[in-house]
Length: 272
Ligand code: KIV
Image (cartoon, rainbow, N blue to C red; front, side, top):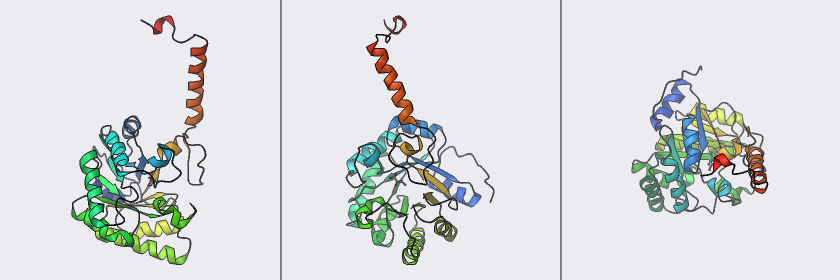
């Protein structure tokens, strides 16, 4: 289907469903702070995800598990202050929605009320169905996340491609249909075979946004630090780096250090 690009002054959950209908691919990137979110929004990215990957790239943790609800709200409110156009979706962090639907709703309400976010994202299908229902019943838009779900990393044991086996692939399709039926507005599919991801995208009417899920889905998401080459050690096959900012920023900073040491900075023009 050809991409008919319509202008969206503000992207809403409804715009995303329209984009899928019109065959326009959805762009999504993470951001966790005001300055980066301003750049991402000005570049017309459709969806900004305040991902719990902040735990890795902002705080240096090995997994997404340690980040707290308060920390997610801090990141989300910084992003919201920068954004004029994109839909801002915030991850509900590990431990804030799995145990009890009432707690899930309280967490989602805190995110919406205290940060001004537009929607929340949760990981899982059937297992978290009651929590998803509660949140949706309160009028809060929910994005699902299936496939490799980093909050369950200790259950999986590795970050390898998921759903290669028939059983897991079947469960994933059923979970996607369940999330759609309950009223989720979109689903992220992470690190699964492209053929399966395409099949999921064709079996539901809500947008499927992939990361390491091939080209047959309705949109793509990446972690901004990976795309810009700020992170160096993370090199999965699905990642396209558009810059090597680690090197470029390092060079600029080294030049500054030299200029200070050699008394070149500040010059006469750079002082009062
Ligand atoms: O937290 C995150 O950045 C994510 C994306 C990888 C989809 O969930």
